[in-house]
Length: 566
Image (cartoon, rainbow, N blue to C red; front, side, top):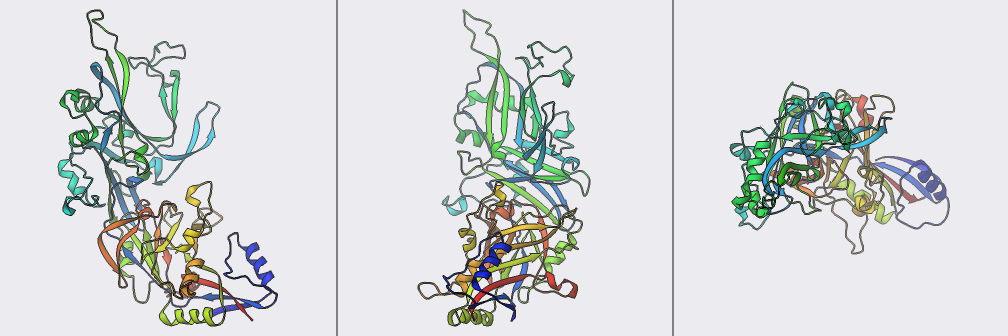
């Protein structure tokens, strides 16, 4: 048993824990008196930790979706494509007399924060959830019509369950995709050399004919001089694509008499959506962003007039707009089925690292990666150690004061990796539910991604640049208490298997199915945390087996702090 005993008064013990730790501590008992308790730090001896590849993961109707090409020097290359249904903003629309499209655009805002505002009024932004080379990491983006119908229900289950699509299901879509490129702008930044710009977007003041105006409403003599234009609307950085007018003229505007626009059920079968495909331009370059397509603006700007009459045979044509909607949002009325296709090519290091995992004795390194990547598992105690601790709690009045898992980053392996997961997530992998400590922690933050700070899992970084990750710490005090102490019915909670994954949001705790279940030391794993699929990043952590003595202090640790009568 590895332990160190500090004989101190209980009052001093309590003050010590509060002053040295910003988090709460659980004493599990009301204790009166002084100088009658020892504090014991116990390091669990029989941890077994190992990694497992997830294989293809359920990737339909996600709350957020990845798009782009991301090259991770340690894990490999990820290409993220996206397909979505599109619905009418207004069912059975009337476009007026002789409608003709002026322009069609798609705008999807990035996650970003304002850093400052220039004297000119320009707002300077910093992008969030963009990985890779960002503005310099260009890739080819093609938007085409999707011809494959994305089902709501699974016909193999007699339509009794929701349809599941997986990250490797793009071959279902490919035979039915269109050949006409819809993002056909002359600006290559919208297609052949797409990148995620952090520049603020402007919509300029124009007249009904689409000509730029000055502040007095007069048509500018030089339509090409951007400095003369008047800003009508400012938008935060986002994906802006000018789409092909003729396609939407034929597909939407000219289709009113067909009956296909009568309602969205008919429309989704008639126009089956859009497919966003990415291609790598230069090996090792590219970038990938996490996007919320349910916030997209897909607008058709057109000119039309009222029907001619005898009194008014030549009615004035006016500029109008019509909105389409895309994406899926479970908390709103948006129910446009979508799939995030993830093509990941493993690096040799990643492949060999996963192959070295040992479910019996544990592994030297843990590889956890989001998307269709890998998760890790921990078996916390062997039978003998567990029973010894339970006996000490039951018979010797040991009280669980605190329990923490500490994962150290293998900095030598992550040296050339620019993006590290900001947070990892610990969960009950046996029952696919959260741990008690997650439930008990109600702490919040101005940044929702930092909620439940007591539960932890947030990366601790070096102070100096490049501020590489040092470790992740997760508190599992309530879980350990429930395993070591009998409940009101005289029963112990099962010593469940702990799962470890990266997470895009600590607030998202639902799970997603695996296409092919696997076993983890005898336990069948059918699903993983959904938030892991949303995050493309990975990290390499030290496990419970250390072969290099220089890394002994980086070994995976579960420290339990007990107070006990002296």
